Amino acid sequence: MGSIAPLALAGTRRPLHEETINRLRDLIVRGELAPGARLNERVLTAQLGVSRTPLREAIKLLATEGLVELLPNRGAVVAPIEPARIAETLAVMGALESLAGELACAQASDRDIAEIRALHYEMLAMHARGDLDGYFRYNQAIHLRLVEASSNAVLAQTYRQLNANVRRVRYMANLSPERWDAAVKEHEAILAALAARDAARLKRLLRDHLSAKLATVLEAIGRKQAA
Figure 1 (spheres, one colour):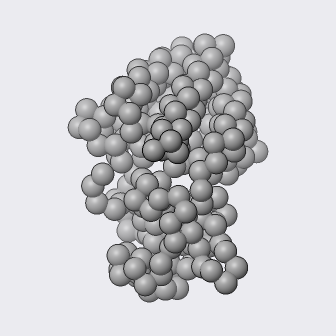
Figure 2: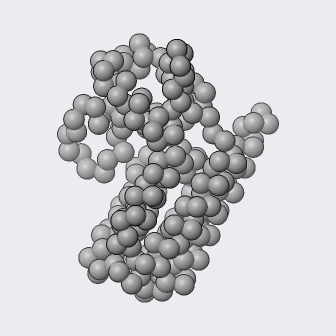
Figure 3: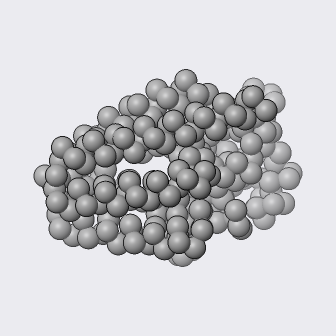
């Protein structure tokens, strides 16, 4: 999937601990550190080119996001992917995104919509190049920007917390070329509904978009478990 890179969209220099968090998160999200894998500090400090202090800070933060499990006296491992938990979380996120879409149709400024459209075009460029990592960064930025456009701070904060827990599975959904292409078409429709401020249509599209993602992810997990 290419070189390790932070999930930030801009190329600005970040503090070392933030850079370490982003790079370790990328390894987990992309599946390069598989569920259940032990986080070996010696190996990771060499791989990431950092000391143990920022690495340990990164591990602790990713534990709060549900990507890492801290085991007493045994270090840390990549958190397992639990299908039932994923289904429950994505169901809640679907409700949140639907509400955010409805609110955004009423609250979003023209500038908000223009920013989302610009992110969408960047995402399309990544898809055209087959750059899944780049696509995923812009895809996540679009969903978050749409939620922020609802102008509901509680909704946005709740969404960020839940999204951190399912970032891996949202990435996994696009590992299927067919699902990736379908997701792009769904995003086209989502943007059109937002631009038209069609709240009812946008709510339905966002709910269906996440439902399709869930179905793809659960199918992929089932194949892995059966292998």
